[in-house]
Length: 403
Image (cartoon, rainbow, N blue to C red; front, side, top):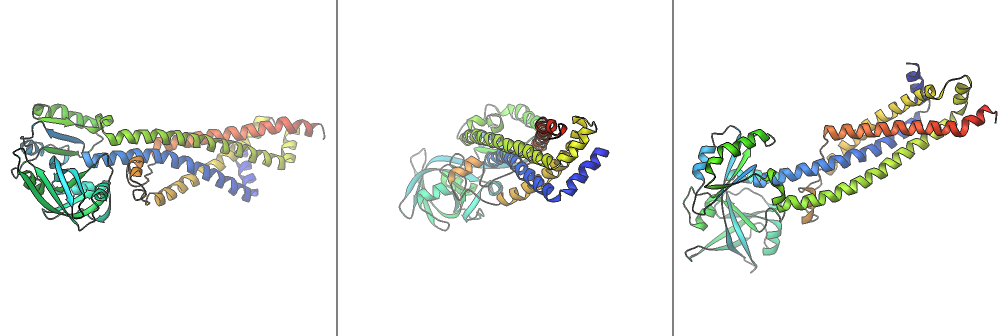
């Protein structure tokens, strides 16, 4: 208790210096917290973006003539499933804008609940996703650029059937969103009714299903559903669980490469921050010891050993780092909340891939937080210990010799 009160008294007497040190620790720790929160946040955002587009489980019909509507009806009774989205899609579509631009594309027709999922992972830059008429379509920004169209413009779609007939439909662009070319590609997103009419298939026909689980992190429920329930449809469908085969998705592959770059960059930054923190604390304490030389000299003269003197410094370090890390964490929460509202999708299409989504996302995981706090505390304690030891080696002999 004596050393604890002595340390508190020293910090109170040097109030201005104490605040400066706490602020210095807060800034360094804030950068540590935000670096690790960014890595965790971008990883989580990538998973959310991929999940919103692909679902937790994707079912594809093995035959173009086979409908998955019966399988959907049977799966609707499963308790682990939150939503099943019907999809009917096909390729070899030619899209022509009123400006004369044309592109090869694919049609993806969805039930209305899919567009609610799409809203969670994209940013709308023109129009919106409220498709309520069969002749409306939403497209990704890169596709809109290639066709030179805006919301409200019309596009003509041509599809050649296996029988050689050419079906034509005119769609009004309801909305343009910022996705990424590795997931959304050159696709037109329409209602199921529109896709079925263009593909000339029956009303209940669907060749793809996206399954969203109530708890996507429950790997046991996911494995049970795939290996038990879906196993009996093995001859009729392909089952894809993107979490089990991330490397097969181009978006996640490229994101991993960019993540490696950020890990290297953040690691180098962390080393620099550690050096600045360590030597900064060491020099600050050393200068403090020179100002308190009379105090240390008296204690040493009366026989107080080095370790007992360090007990005071120990508690001072605990005080400073406790308040500094707390302020740093609060600063990081505030700054990350501001940066999280800034969209980088407007800057570059590649930023969506690099960040895992359209925004900077910060997630403060408890494990990462505890490791950062522990690392900084240990570094600070060693820096103050090393500083006092260095001071003793250089100054105590002179003070004992009466110099």
